[in-house]
Amino acid sequence: MLINGIEKWAPRLAVKRAVVDFSSPNIAKEMHVGHLRSTIIGDALARMFEFSNVDVLRRNHVGDWGTQFGMLIEYLFENYPNWEDVGETAIGDLQAFYKASKQRFDSDAAFKERAQQAVVRLQ
Image (tube, rainbow, N blue to C red; front, top):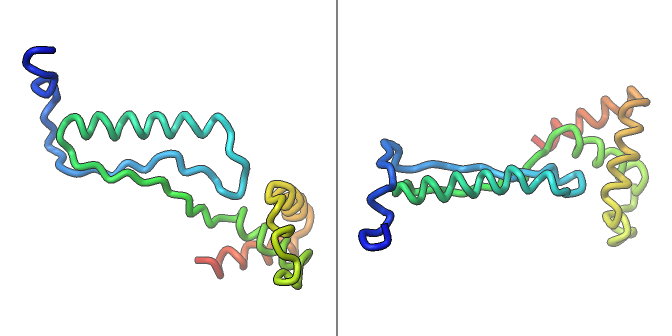
């Protein structure tokens, strides 16, 4: 292998191009060590495809615009109606806002409806 190189060992795949979407953490929540797993698996798959002469497009999709963002939007609109006056402090503790909005979502049907409508507006 050292003399002839390892390229001859690379399998020839019928696929010429592949998209590998990996990691994709929920950006409304805190990152943790568990996010490394999908990142490592995705990177390994991309490298194996590249080794087999496949053109790889790597993507890390962070556009999770689901219910979490609807909850956050409604919570922040209610608690910071003059958000332009608040400055950076309104976004300083996103995880605390997320937890508070989740509690409100689970206990208040009207808030839940408004949060779901916020998701529709995002889409």
